[in-house]
Amino acid sequence: MTSNEQRAALQRQIWAIANDVRGAVDGWDFKQYVLGTLFYRFISENFIDYITGGDSSVNYAAMADSDPNIAAAKDDAIKTKGYFIRPSDLFVNVAKNANSNDSLNTDLAHIFADIEASASGYPSERDIKGLFADFDTTSNRLGNTVKDKNTRLAAVLKGVAELDFGDFADNQIDLFGDAYEFLISNYAANAGKSGGEFFTPQHVSKLIAQLAMHKQTSVNKIYDPACGSGSLLLQAKKHFDQHLIEDGFFGQEINHTTYNLARMNMFLHNINYDKFNIQLGNTLIDPHFGDDKPFDAIVSNPPYSVKWVGSDDPTLINDDRFAPAGVLAPKSKADFAFVLHALNYLSSKGRAAIVCFPGIFYRGGAEQKIRQYLVDNNYVETVISLAPNLFYGTTIAVNILVLAKNKKDTTIQFIDASGLFKKETNNNVLLDSHIEQIMRAFDTKENVDHFAKSVPFEQVAANDYNLSVSSYVEAKDNREVVNITKLNADLKTTVAKIDQLRKDIDAIVAEIEGTGANA
Image (cartoon, rainbow, N blue to C red; front, side, top):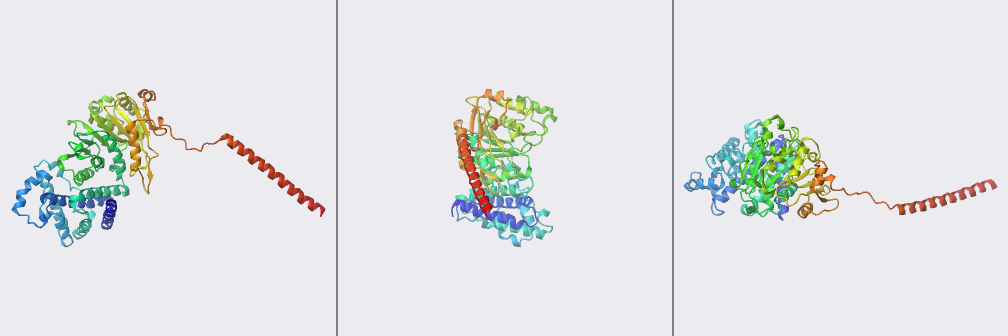
């Protein structure tokens, strides 16, 4: 079985678990139990792999919790891995007896609390605390009675236990992470409520990561100011060797559940606690990392046109992030607030790639003034228009804004990638060939008819600082070219044929009428 076949089979199994065991529980509400169980199994097996050093002759799961060797290794284990799990609390041991455990729901609650508590007083405390907060084993969403709750929890544990991830050291990390992202994306696509807003499809994430990291031999760290489940950050890890990202992965997320997803996702992709820093909070009014060294790479898909406090807070105009532009983003449309935030956090050698709502590139008022600030200071490298229906929950054809502080000239590049997509059942997708085509144009900055154009700063300024791609890249005329000369000749031939036909008909009619008169 190829890796792709293995991944596809695993995804089918996981989705089946999610559907089979949820019963009357809403899929969107129930996702956390499947995701949380998947994470519980991962950190259990990850910990076993660490504590045994990969030695299969050492059966940590069979050891007694009171074994003195375990006590001796506990402190170093927490310092290295960030957490500690007793043998009896391992996923494999809990899952084995789940169906017969009348106190399964409370046992799981205690186990999760103990795992989180193990980090207390250690550098990893902030990264471990609250990881299982959304795995509420006492929730009535699992059933009205303890028995119902335990039955459903046991079904989830059994389903996840039966998943074949292969040998941990070989491929389990990738498979776990891919499985996790598969679940997140599918719940986002099928949620029926605002579930997709935090998830950036992998193919779009891949493009954004490549834009932000382009031709940087190394970056100090990478940052997403509205990180959702962390998919954009993880794409950077997938496409660039880890040593290129020196200080790790940073992000901030306002939604508590999604914040936990992001932290879990870091672990699932083998990013240790000391190589990531995900913070909870409102990026626009309570930003983290402002006192840190600026970031060499920033990736972001902030929420489209979300409301924010804006001018209702008079202190914000003096904020270092917004003051240089001299105006705040409209209260009803925070898009440019996220853009200015990212710009402020960007290093002098860095690049930011941000998904943006198209309207901000041509509307007047405060948004026009912010565009003027960005253009006049030569921060806008490229604007890319993407195909419609690439994201879950919206059919809008969004743009990607690429910002840089080290441009070598004052031209601005515009790329019309709206025609690059493969149509699938629910959404369009970007293929690798599409991404390669966009990146080739981005790299060379060459003009390509109907696709890419580099425009002098003066032209953009004269056009009221309009940054809409369609204003500069002429759309291809797909109408059929008509040869007028040939058309006229064809018409003359057709008319002659009609005239001859009429004469023939008249002759036949005259003959018939003459025959009738003779009779």
